[in-house]
Amino acid sequence: MDYNNLPKDIKIILFDGVCNLCSGAIQFMIKHDKKRNFRYASLQSELGKELLAERNIDPKIIDSIILIDPKKAYYFKSTAALEISKELSGLYPLLRIFLFFPEKMRDPIYDFIAKNRYKWFGKKESCMIPNDEIKSLFLDF
Image 1 (cartoon, rainbow, N blue to C red):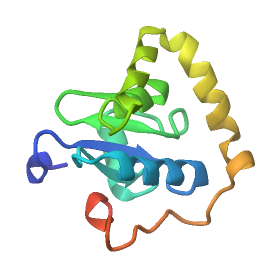
Image 2: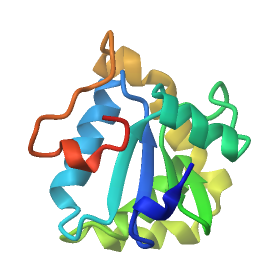
Image 3: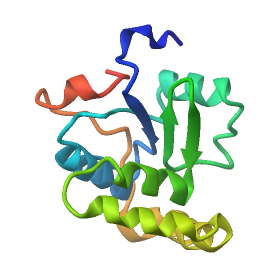
């Protein structure tokens, strides 16, 4: 993938595009990303699959949220969520304190929610389609 078209400070969030919880979380992030630090793509999209393959991430193992900081690092599960919170407006950056807890403590809680997300929040037949107002923030449209 050619990242030259994106400003160097733009981070990419890959998400489960058919999950209602994940789609709602993306809407929340867009609302609270006042500096427009993030761009979005679904894991199910061709771009999402390409970004996963570039990082040797198996979508059968990691199937929820992934934060990619191009040419630096990538994060998944609870670490991705907490790294994202650091960039949001309001009090959400305070959640970074949970990064001091080891992933072995954080990820089981994340995994429990991720495992039950379809049962609790439902699932769409296809990925969300952003409205015209936010379409420019999505890399796969």
